[in-house]
Image (cartoon, rainbow, N blue to C red):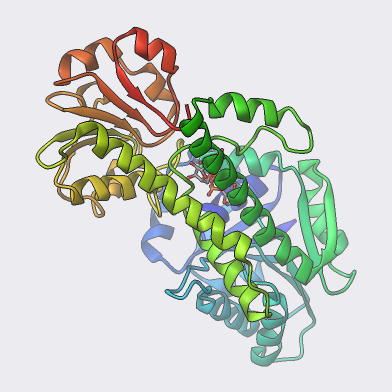
Length: 429
Ligand code: UDX
């Protein structure tokens, strides 16, 4: 099928590349001329495992191309996917200006029946607004359909999630666009659930808020584990074997971050407020997330006694593993808190150091994870990168003034670390 994707961020670019890879003809549109030039030249603006190869392969096969012109994308396609940012505003509500602008431009470019699909995470009832906007600004009375098709990919696993989705949600106002939407997703062999538009939009906010709730729940349990000598990983394993609960998203740590959970929680709380419901449960999820970080910082300050003028090595800056994304990263938050307490930092991340520089200008960036501990008083693990499990512990011990490791992601075994002579503090164990 002929598809256009408007917006080449994490969602748009990965979606475009995967659609092309299963055989669709894809035009990716972005108003950032530099980004489009980079993509046209074979470059990739973000780090995402498998993405560069996928883009290269499908550009070469002639199934994927990039342009700055929405009109060109609309003219070339049967279905137009909107995947532009919906950033948070200071009051927690969502900035819908990018969606509105794109809807207006699509309206201006419509000359025949098209399906306009929203992929961005948006407040419930956005579909109605998009339809209204297209009607208002189209030059002629052209027929179109608006569809909600939320994206559930995780950064760092985006290609895998898109190629093997748990489910595809298609929210529609009439049955007309359903066969075309099913044809787009037929190669992915996932269950397709067709709903009304409002429900589809709600599925996204309700799912992300539920996953954040799951993380805050286990983080709250981790506080009880610490107070009682229990082990949160054993508790999570025992809980997770109950098929009704499931083990995934039950890893205690420094709390959730990233460009989705914090924003989507705030948005869902705001949307609920606007329709007259005080979603206190979700406010508590937010509170636990802040407290989790505060408890970890307290653990560091109490152990080190004095933070001022200590040098601390921090492993991890990205908001989670497999990404270079530092937006709302708990690791960055932690670094800023340690700097605020007067510590000096030596930091390392396998992929996110470039993006972190703007947020953390006054720290020392170290290219080799095994050099971070040199001259430090303690080490901290802030992101769950797998490679940190391969850290040369013997060498780190020699480099540190005392063998102290604060593990915010529970990567090592507490008993083994104790046997090796480490003062080892993790989360909920
Ligand atoms: C999330 C949703 O998973 C995805 O479906 C949605 O489309 C976008 O938002 P993403 O933000 O990329 O994806 O990352 P995710 O893997 O969900 O992790 C979010 C945060 O939760 C990270 O900071 C991660 O470290 C944290 N997390 C996750 C935990 O602390 N514990 C866990 O068990 C799982």
